[in-house]
Length: 406
Image 1: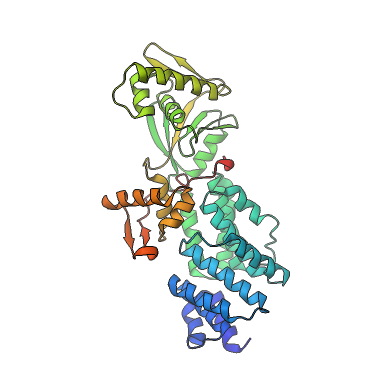
Image 2 (image 1 turned 135 degrees about the vertical axis):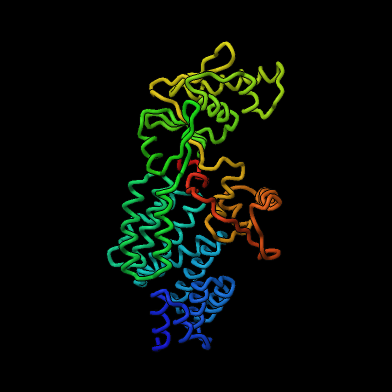
């Protein structure tokens, strides 16, 4: 490796893309193409970065396995930064294995972090944690340690473990300061911010108040029965009952939880569960059936008793019943939570992250765009969607989580 390539690589490692380009901007050999691609990615020109990295991969010979693997990892890094979630997990895993076998542990660790962050973003929290299992960070440089701790903090936040997130972010902050890379320090600062803004709303006995992430963790450790509207589950004494696939039953549970210790009239339950402002005998019969189903689902946690005017929730052991609601109650909450990260998203990547169809995402975006809540730029496959962050709120509880992680 010649001195200019070495100097450019050192500049990129220090977060100085313009300094790196001074050394390799006019060169078209494979190492220079790769470094130019990384530099353009750091400058935010992801389209040019992708093209340069692909050219570098082709330019490296078939025997240059480590160089090609590094290019694949860099391409995945650019794809993640540009919220292109369709890149191949298998290709990244193969590149990581090659780097580990050839002794490039720093770039292999970066590949693990990228894979984990992508899995975390699409709600596969268990899989993200598994990717990091056994990773030894002792020999990694400060920038890699900071990224590792940021990923650990992200997993802890998605699991609503504020104490673990606090510890990981403290380690990330120290590593980022040791690395001396401003962009990395800014990312750590953004993560710290999540711990100090409302992450949810508590609705109890007709009153409502905001909760920080730490407050949510304490609530789950309390003896209260929690109707969790962020994940459509009911929690009590360590038991978790998922109603994510039973939206009508969860709507009934939430209405009963919000009214506790009082009851809810039948016409109100019909409106909340079935979306009907009018009711007749068929609606009342359907309500009786669904209340019986809800009673069966909750049998280990609470009872649903009939009253003169409706129904009431009666917990078995828990002293209180509360409803944990997202910081922003919005039918497009999950979609807006992804867009609120400040990055530009394609409809394909949003569909992958939400676990729904691209057409469904397109309809939601068109509805939000007509209301002026999101904006699009570009045309065709290059079209991307953005929105300002929701001011003053953490969006961790708005992001969907795979059902197996409940």
